[in-house]
Length: 282
Ligand code: ADP
Ligand code: MG
Picture 1 (cartoon, rainbow, N blue to C red):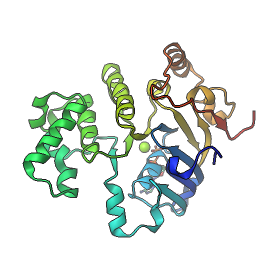
Picture 2: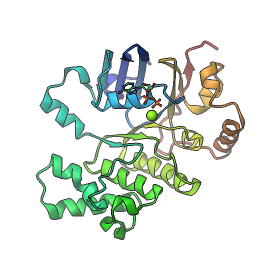
Picture 3: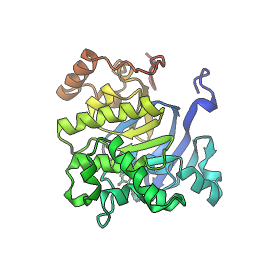
């Protein structure tokens, strides 16, 4: 651990996590820390274990070995009531939205409030309408069904639902995947605003280089079951670790890097820029 970072400043601590499916080793000793109020991204090739790690952070799956602490709580040592209480403190936006097709958008957004609170229907609808507006959706979307929404609207509705319980921690699996560049750009801004306005800690999985350069404070690169590099994008860009280089070399990587450098993404909340380190000494 960085000696300047105390446990209270950490939202998530993953330590020596190993995960296997039968013979298949997905994680072979993952260590990483997410600081409070940072936008932390996990990148890595398809099948590198990003979604599995996210599922482990939100109590949907257990690693074979290692510990994960979320908001100070050891996920291996939770009673059922403690797990329930912890689940209320985070929101999750799944890759494919995860909205229920038989419910309207407003009903979908209100669902966590119905499950976790004793608030009345009218108040739940009011809160849900407010979350809908927060994610930039028009009021008339409230009465629509998920099948009627565009990809970008679906992501926003799913984000609104993730925000229903005013979480401290937000998990996003591929928030811009499948969106056209305009809609993806809107999601970038929304993610940054949520952190800046509410101090949310955000953990996202993404391949989107614009999102990584424009929004992520720190990024962890997963490959071969380990974290191969962790740090700011500009720090990682200096790495010579081959699994890290893959994200920077090639035309797409270079174009995004140019854009990222051309439009500096100085965080507006006054935290100092974070340094980078890779598993390989420079
Ligand atoms: P990523 O999100 O990085 O693409 P995943 O975490 O979804 O990767 O999956 C990592 C590996 O674990 C893949 O090879 C996948 O097939 C395997 N895997 C994930 N979940 C299961 C499961 N429930 N049973 C068996 N294998 C799984
Ligand atoms: Mg995945």
